[in-house]
Amino acid sequence: MEFEYTPKVKEMQARLLAFFDKHIYPNEKRFYAEIQANRQAGNAWVPTKVIEELKPLAREAGLWNLFLPHSKRAPEGLSNLEYAPLCEIMGRVPWSAEVFNCAAPDTGNMETLERYASESLKDRWLEPLLRGEIRSAFLMTEPAVASSDATNISCSIERNGDEYVINGTKWWSSGAGDPRCQVYIVMGKTNPDAGRHEQQSMIVVPADTPGITIKRFLPVFGYDDAPHGHMEIELENVRVPAANILLGEGRGFEIAQGRLGPGRIHHCMRSIGVAERALELLCQRALKRVAFGKPVAAQGVTRERIAEARCDIEMARLLTLKAAYMMDTVGNKVAKAEIAMIKVVAPNMALKVIDWAIQVHGAAGVSDDFPLASWWAHQRTLRLADGPDEVHRNAIAKLELAKHMNINPDDISMPVTRGF
Ligand SMILES: Cc1cc2nc3c(=O)[nH]c(=O)nc-3n(C[C@H](O)[C@H](O)[C@H](O)COP(=O)(O)OP(=O)(O)OC[C@H]3O[C@@H](n4cnc5c(N)ncnc54)[C@H](O)[C@@H]3O)c2cc1C
Image (tube, rainbow, N blue to C red; front, side, top):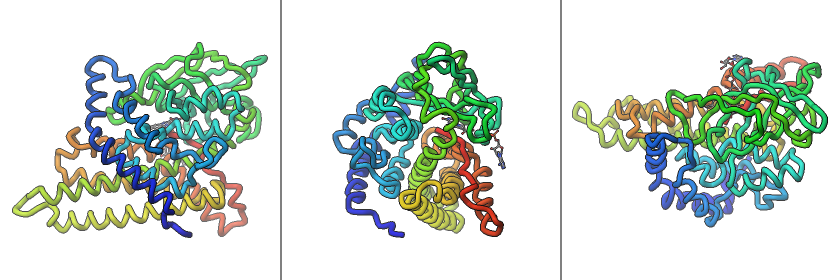
């Protein structure tokens, strides 16, 4: 395995870091101030000026759609291994990914459309998404069923002539709060009588189709995450053309398996970036804050945590790079153990480092004067979204046990659950 970044990646890393110095860090507080001002004015659910101003600059700097794997539309597309260090940088400021059109859930939705949609669906939805003109949401999780087991998903997608009729309630549909969110990819059952993994399908649904109601937003530890948001959405007799089905009836699991690997690893890359940033804040605060006659950095416990944080970040980064390398070389299916491992390791690691950084900051650490509390809240959701830790650990354990039993590891599938 060769993890040395190529000259092309090193050059892009330098360009991205320069963009952060010039445009992202100086605007970091402005982003939150703008949303707060919108909230106080009565509507936080509007796109921010700061991101819209920065998007053309990112395009000009050649830092656009970096997540997109090699394809007809992206002849210069990057591999997972090449994208990893760039995505990590975006993790340093959680809202920044959108500036480069690399934000979830659009990235996963764009990859899904690129791989599985017809040319006319691509022209209608993929192109404006790639240009960053509209946004999208992925509707899989449902309040009524344990959605970590996607075979439970029960929203019905019924064929009626040239159309499909959709009925169901979804929640935690991330990004659906944004008025630019014009399209959903919905998972549901086309045939409840088919085999366990052939019942589900995915279908493209324009957000303004009659019968769709956004019922409410779901706060995360009190954060509304506006203007992105996580919404509960009701679909009542929603009719879309039959041609909107992706790949065909009963292929939902197949599509989910295809899209989940990259989505999961992108979250992990960003978790490493945010952990690096938290460690920086921890060290800076510990060096200048004096308690009981010496800087907090002089306390053994602080040094112990700094050292452990550095070790943990390095380990998580290496595992992420290994997973990315394997996805590029042997494919997502063979890399499923590494993808599951890093999905457990990276958010837990980031949570630990952020928690230590909060501790060093004292009460300031849980306030809005520092970004640590919101980073912690976000990372905590990653232990649930895209599959709870336990489900991934279960898959890892099954693969491990398969080595000692007469079981083909190919028969053990990657957990199908989806987050933002
Ligand atoms: C901030 C946020 C954003 C999200 N964005 C999206 C989105 O955009 N689109 C979308 O469709 N969904 C989204 N989700 C939903 C997310 O993917 C689900 O919450 C997740 O898949 C878990 O499903 P559930 O909440 O129904 O938990 P349940 O399935 O009810 O599981 C509850 C708990 O049971 C335990 N458990 C489950 N299975 C096992 C097992 N095999 N072994 C041991 N324990 C187990 C786990 O501890 C688990 O946390 C988001 C969630 C959050 C928090």
